[in-house]
Image 1 (cartoon, one colour):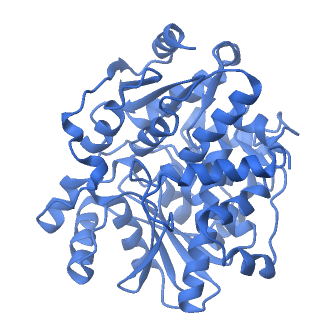
Image 2 (tube, one colour):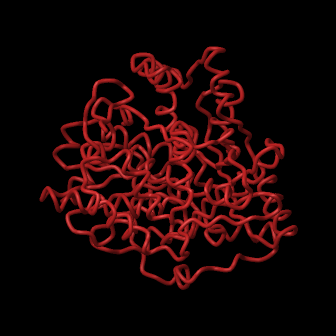
Length: 462
């Protein structure tokens, strides 16, 4: 299996090269040159596997340059820190199936990919004798999950940008209370989109990237997407056992398009997904894209689901590559149009293709709180505000012909303010959050400026 860039100038690289490159050197995002297609018989076998073995089987289709025993050990180690034996259990409430993705160290779905990526980086650096300086931006959950994935690891420093006072207090504390010597938290005076733009700009400076051995943990790194593909297969298998249904819908709260793109890859591999329901909050650039072909930049609005407070979804580029029939020139022109004009235009044929795969709606703050309240009243189950947008979208857009699986992307205890406003009490905090506010913190506030962040990194890089 070889990898290529969406922009067409990087081709034929290995999985290990793709992981270490992160953002492609031509400014694009890396994708496998082919997507393996699984037969119904293959799917039947996979549906019977425990999560770590399933992860090994799915990932092995995309990883040919790491010995199987080493890959299996990495996967097993990555999920040994999860608090539920099923890793990503599926529960049934109010006619919906909820895929709980919050049983990892930082209580968010990002742990599933970033525990694996941290171990993968450590393996590759040990093998090569090299070092790495990880640079990433977060809208809330990626930062803490990445930090927990690499804290204390040899040959790695990590620099995480988060928008100052625009993540939840728990999300902020989960990052800033990690004081390992290899961890650097930077609160930028701006939005997540500003941080994401800075990261891409710095990675685009190839001399700087090479000089300081920069590595990527954002979902621009293909390994992030690959690890998330696995839980679509797992959830489908669990629901199939319970219902006998082959086809399902997935409802996915997403702001940066990475999580739902993993579902799209699973669908292209042959997983029988009827459609992917894309749930956004008031920052609705992706809902506008799906429903009207309106992919135009907008102002970022603070919401109760801050991890989706995004108006420039970087992973959409991967999907657009396929939408444009693997035409790198067309894709590059579209991304340049977005840079120049803040929008991308689409043909009627392309809009029809989009609607064949996706349904979408945006869920505002009032609807989010109402969904948390009503779902709790009906079932006793507490939703976090991101998951609530997926529940609302799944109920609103899908009939009863196939089961609906909603991704629960974070533990409700990470967002106690929204939960309390909805149900009148705070969610029960897990042990990992006890005493969090009393721990030592380390963080620096910095201007959202690429040059200043490069200077900061250069002084502290390995």
